[in-house]
Length: 195
Image 1 (cartoon, one colour):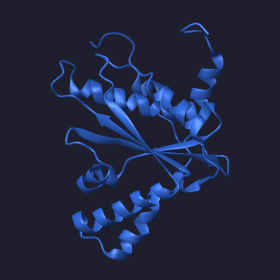
Image 2 (cartoon, one colour):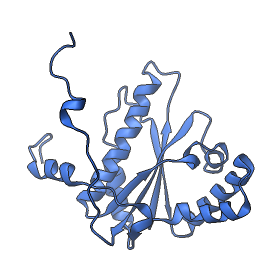
Image 3 (cartoon, rainbow, N blue to C red):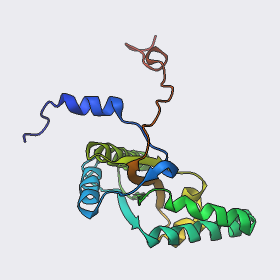
Image 4 (cartoon, rainbow, N blue to C red):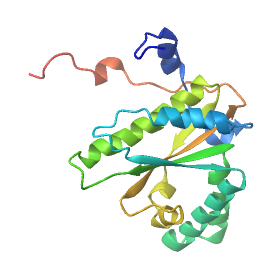
């Protein structure tokens, strides 16, 4: 297929895509071949300077439990949370059948501003959830406390210059998701140069 071919169905997908709460997802999740397709889409984002300022960690099955244990330990160590609260948070990582940890891996030595590199990581996350929808899967892009935790970042092997751009869950939807309020077009769009 030629590059930039018109595809009205893609516009329809964008206008009808809806996140599914990770806790409401059911299996099966995408298999290895489908995850590769989703990640291939993540690798095709705008990337000023061709820096590839991102990487991905795919967690399935018991690998998600390891992340849950890490999050629980971090809560106790960093937030002095009670073991009971920490135990409950172990389930965060196992909400959906497949979890991709999207990692922003910026290069401060580059002439490309770090902010632009971070934007590329965000675009990669968006491409993943769009690709998942196109392949018939539910998705949910989450961050939250764990994405900023030094203990979690260290336990996942992140370097000092890396950050978690998102925990992206993939699975199937048990029920049709409901629409959420959307912003008013005219409140967020200005035509013409500001006076």
